[in-house]
Every structure is written in C-alpha cells, then in structure tokens.
Image (cartoon, rainbow, N blue to C red; front, top):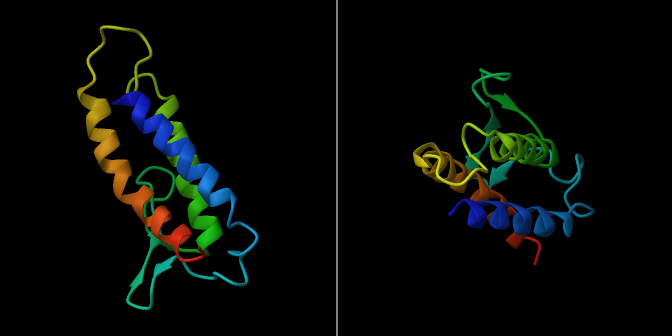
Length: 109
C-alpha cells in the first residue's frame, strides 16, 4: 500500500508536469473545480488559516506537503515489521487532494 501511494504520487507529479505551461499564475489565478468550488490551502501546521492562492501555487503547496508526509519515517516507515496504521490514515487523507489534482490535469486533455 505504501509503495502504491508513492507510485501514485509520482505519476500525478509527472502528469501535472505536462500541463504546467498551460496552467500559470495568470491563466489559473484560483484553484477551483469549475465555477462552483474553490480550494484554499491550509496544512494545519505552517498555514493554519486557509489562504486563497493560484492553482500552480496550490499544487506546489500540495506536492511539497505530500512529499514531506511520504518522507516522514513516523508515518511511512521504511523498515520491515513496523506498524503501518498511520500510513493507511495518511494515504486516505492524501487521496482527495490527489484526485483534485487529477481532475485539474484532466481539464487540459
């Protein structure tokens, strides 16, 4: 499951890389899912109050946050035999963000 989360993150990262020239600060000034939904960034630690930001900035925050989670040994232990209950929780928490990114990428293709 952990390996799948890392692979999924890498694939989403590569997919987003294909649209970076189309989704810029100017062309995507707000992270949204159509006209009805707007996403504001907050990670609960460094940014506690949600902030409005452009789609590229939101994705940058998101990818950095996910990478930090994946690199955290207490959440994703690399040693065999350690408990992975926290890993499951983090993967389930991360997935909605990744699907938002996937949806955003799909709008350009």
